[in-house]
Length: 155
Image (cartoon, rainbow, N blue to C red; front, side, top):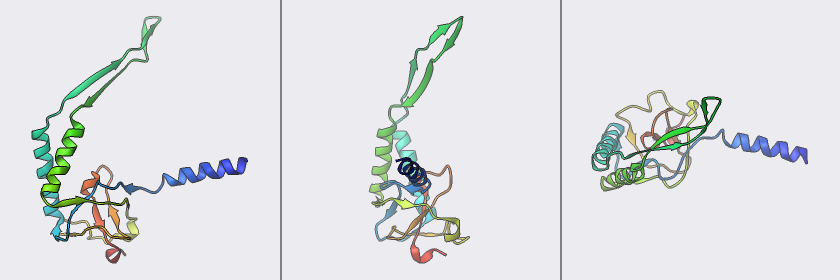
């Protein structure tokens, strides 16, 4: 029983080690080759349009705490943008209007040893993902900005 529990915990822990770009979060044009620079410009243009069309609507919520011996405990203040989902929809529709479609399967992140040193540059031609592809993804980068690395381009 203990062995099964330990193996399950290890398995669950290791499952979190593989990182993927979720389906529907990286966009490419259907059968149209273009550079990373052009795709990035289209993404930026759609972000600007979405921001202008759907401005932020910040909602602040406070959870009350309690006071004990003159000190306050447990209260929290959070803020959220109520328009964020609507802005995201506008952004993805804008990309669709420009001819982009989302990836339909999750893409694993590329390992450093798979990526040629000059692969992620602005003149790189962007391809639609296919079986065996992985994503060149930098920390802090949005999924939509990731570059797809096809199997034939991997080291």
